Amino acid sequence: EGDGIGRMEAPRGEVIHYVKMDGHEHPYSWKVRAPTYNNILPWIPMLRGEQIADIPIVAASTDPCMSCTNRVGIVHHGKRKMFTGEQLHELSVKKTRRLMQ
Image (cartoon, rainbow, N blue to C red; front, side):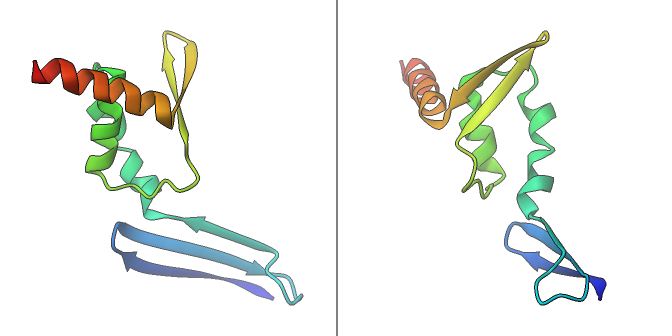
């Protein structure tokens, strides 16, 4: 029984594992805070006022590990719209083509 915290500096930043045991063989609770969580926080000021097509470029600049994330929600004036990874890619390609003209 008991709990413990493990911290380590990973390539993308600090990773933290918290484990709580209750006397059984398997953890009662196990929580992970991956570096990506901290790396996402700067996105808010970086993306404010920018176009949706800029999201992939800003996101890539922080080198996120988003293996479980394949969509994003945009909230503007209380209205929410979801974009898939494919839709974000398409918007980014279109904007890049406009900039290259």
